[in-house]
Image (tube, rainbow, N blue to C red; front, side):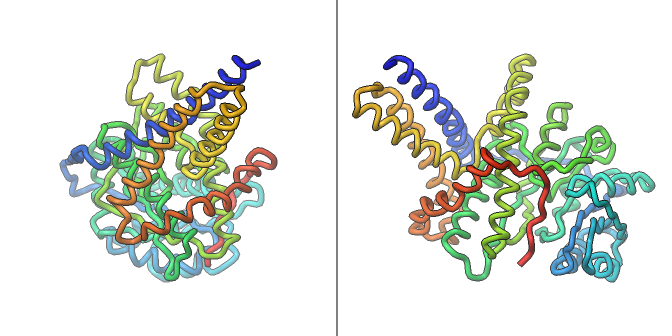
Length: 396
């Protein structure tokens, strides 16, 4: 019994330390390695279209479109898919001069279906590159769309620029911790993967693709994290994503508790489902192909949401400490978990010190335990009543 229980704790500790170690490797790479130059030969005749799926986005669609119109040759190069809208999204979008199509379906609801509908429409004009942008985002600087489009076309690869969450005007501690977690995932880890010359995951907005490449995969689904799945599908087809770090796509964290919980539930349950179903075959393919890049891509996807990683570490550490004190387990699991904790804490503190210390006070990090407690119901619902359908986050 002693041997079995001790072995179980060691295995669980190893499961926690592996993603923690890779997280630290990504963080250290982001901080200390040289950023690779993504050079391209510009095509002056490049035909680029921006595709925007929009479901009841009347509150913010105009601001998004006015931001993007300056980044294309003409407003008609922006296509808005007003998807199952019951508000004035389509009318507001048309008033800015962009192209608008409307889609209504009582059975096929979700961002993936809207994107697929828009791509089918673009078959008429057959652009060279399609840039996907969410309806609530602002892209800066104004050269970003052109740069990622040219880069995608020249490299024949998907290109993802930095996607971050702008803090609300009066952020709570929970908002600041959420923004920090988002920054670690979408900037620090992306930068680390890029500097290591490994494929980067896609993040759903601020993405550029050669049009013909998108025709090789299916978006026609209600996947909770269609962006993550798209990145996986393209990587397995031999089209790993590049990270363009000189542009930024900004969205705003929802301030209302219900909206924030809906958003987080969709993101994190979708992430966990992808981790469980997609990471094993990716790692298997990496070993079969002897591909270090595919292996790294799988290890990055295997890192769970940061709050869940901390929660797992705390729970296992408490269990291992109790077992050791009772004499039913050795000190080995505790030693492994101590290293894992060092890796996690170092990654968070280094990321904060380099990228967020001016915006997020150090004392705010003391709120991390409360943030984790807030997210526990999300993880429990994944086990007990998993989210099955794509649900849009309500705008404030």
